[in-house]
Image (tube, rainbow, N blue to C red):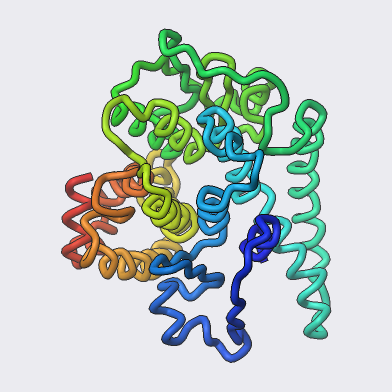
Length: 354
């Protein structure tokens, strides 16, 4: 539905090809040859095939911009702000909203009772997100658009990254800044004492999560949005991490979404079980490890097939799609999960290089 709304909003003609979810067509060929994770939608435009709905929306916006709105997507500062709120929708709004829709709509359609405990829990989570949205919309007409004068950050000003060196999300930003050969000031946040939940940090990130970036008068949160902002704003610095060609960038976006939705959830759970628990004197849950190693193996199978035909995950050069995998991969390569990489030669080669 997300992709359909984007197509309608851009007033584009398209052919809709229905997929029978009840019959399990998502998990069969030829659908799997188009979307290896067996999830809809799929977008075909000429010789380009995309999956992951948010990547499809970005592609439509860049390839078919609405008259008068082109600069919203071209100006790096606006891109950074929009990317941050796209990630907020993805990681903060979507999870509780989707669970509520399942409980309150789909279960009713199937004659099943809603789980009231789940509803109460997810409503409380959604309420906190909507409180942030309410605050945001006091100063902005829309979530992803900054109303008022915008300016390019001063290249002479030192960026500040607020976070923790233990945070894989913060490490993602550090890696990007390093690739772009940019100087920055690291402002440590003491997460053990709960500093990330205190007012001074919540003013930078209302969700109380690290990292947060300050670049001139711009403040951003959500690590993947920050890395995209850095890559676009400082495209002339260091290593290129994005593609200038819109179609190549669309494909890159797909694999950034794959990292966020398929790789990161299971890899993060394994990192917690196999590394962080031991650091905090906690016992590893072997059942959780086994379950998530099986899930990660399926993701790595898709990567292995991808890398048989592509030099890197996102295309023919090292990009943000590869960089976003760095923190979790580095940790897992030092644990028992390394066997999952070792048994897949194409991905193992990339993991060692990363």
